[in-house]
Length: 289
Picture 1 (cartoon, rainbow, N blue to C red):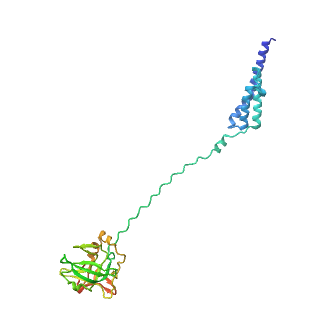
Picture 2 (cartoon, one colour):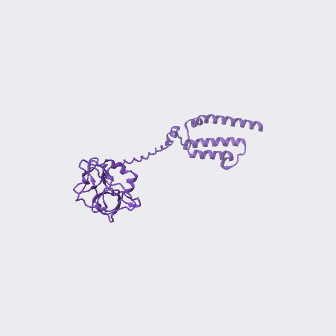
Picture 3 (cartoon, rainbow, N blue to C red):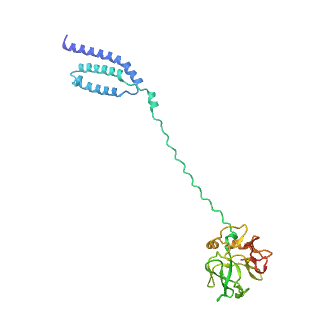
């Protein structure tokens, strides 16, 4: 047999062997592709080693011919299959599905709580309790130099210094008649000038179409005592509030004397000491201001 015929026969035998090997491997490879999801680190190492061996030959030496390449390839394939049978780890697709981390829902943004609306302050009751009426006594009185209707007075209402107050009473009293009189003084008024005289307060009087008279406190009422009105308790308004809130305009219309001349607010007597505050002479049904 010639050398060429020998080579052709050798190739044919190799082809037959390869076909037999491939036919034997097909079921194994197909089964591996169907049932295997991932392979272990050892199989990856084997594949890497296989690639290196195919390129270099056994023991790292380069392959010398095509026949040796084929034989070497067959040997490596068989070794690879043997190593897979011994050490491969098979992971089912179902395990992959179950091992997937659950998707965490993003927390819903909390709704901002509405701030409570500030409650509107209850309207302030405008009644006689907002007036700071004090028991006083006139210490001095003289006629205003520039105003024909005014008296200028110094009145003790229990403070460190007497109040200076102007009253439009010259048509009804004489200056000498005023000194020593016990009176009711509206004390929480701001100082204002009356024809140049700084007047800090008001002397309460009852008036009708014919006359104007003082409202007198009981004889036993202490100087500086606050005049009360049953059922109308509370702190008096400040001097500024009396003007701004128009307290006098709200209260004075209901401040009158009754049929006995008793000064009253909405029919309730004004009191101090042990008795009522009464208009001088018992002037009945008169306006008090």
